[in-house]
View 1: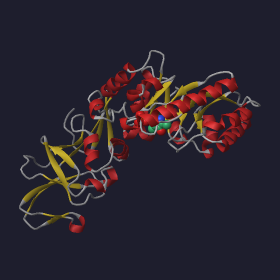
View 2: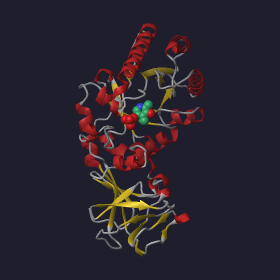
View 3: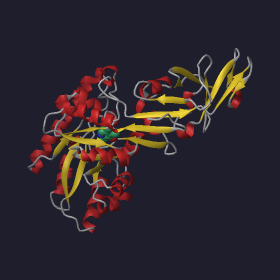
View 4: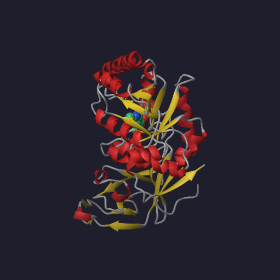
Amino acid sequence: MPKTQETVLEIDLSALKHNYDYLKSKLQKNTKFLAVVKAFAYGNDADEIALYLQNLDIDYFAVAYTGEGVALRDAGVTKPILVLHPLPIGFSAIIDRCLEPSIYNEKVLNRFMQMASDKNQKNYPIHLKFNTGLNRLGFSENAVDEIYSKLNTSDVVRVESIFSHLAASEDLSEKEFMRHQINTFKNISEKFKNLFGYQPMLHMCNTSGILNYPEAHFDMVRSGIGLYGFGNSEKENKNFRPIAALKSVISQIHDIEKGETVGYNRAYKSIASMKTATIPIGHADGIGRPYGKGKGYVIIAGKKAAIIGNVCMDMIMVDVTGIDCEEGDEVIVFDATNTADELAHSANTISYELITDISQRVKRIIKK
Ligand SMILES: *Cc1c(COP(=O)(O)O)cnc(C)c1O
């Protein structure tokens, strides 16, 4: 890659392939793989990522909202797409674009069945989401009977899968609660099988679930963050390769005297003469204000340069005292070695938030 001359997010598809292969190596041969590409594939580029994964042997995609699924269809994604959190206003589009809804309560089930019936559907695939302890979305365990009495009398929809979500799959101190969730899920699937006379596909694990709970892989797993290169632990991070590098350039360098201030609200005051660099990336690009005031940093000439003062909308100022650099030089915000995970921790957040925050203003460059 030639050195960048503006703020860009470089996406390395060979790293994506590496992460996919690593996750697949954790699965039994016949376990299906669902790639979670919600939120622009975690801030990367949903179209490019999904089209690339579609050419590998991915079985399913998932997005959060209906509009994200429609965008993938427009981009040419033909594999099944599960919409994790559809709202009734999008049900017409779901059916028109062959998306598959997660159905998480009775109201949503009724509304979707009505729409499927209005559109003369038969056996339209739906996915039943059960709440086993996260208390976010999903039917409760004892809803299976009601669901049965509703579905038993109609053939407009067909249950393609039943699924649940672990509350703390990355936190090994929560093993007992995860086992409790897994058992609850097994009970639900048993109950379903007894009533319906067949068993749809079962799935429960996200990335950390894949790594930590092989006994809960069931028929399919759902991975997001792992594909993008993070394993949610120091040990597992070594097995993944972050696919994205966020780079920028130095626009201007200033020599600052002792006692001068830098940036809005004069939030930084120099205690000695120093050198600062201004970088064209700010909170509108996804580097939020919590990274300011010395918490976050960028890498210039291989050295850490702290973000000083307040993060502006379009710029940050960093301390480059003692760093051999000039205007036009490349700046690394994060890459495969200076990871988004570490940078996120500097501002008390997690990789998920930092990478999904990189705004659409930042140009994406795909490395094939
Ligand atoms: C986002 C999401 C995932 C993916 O989780 P990762 O930790 O990124 O692998 C899986 N399942 C559901 C229901 C989700 O909302």
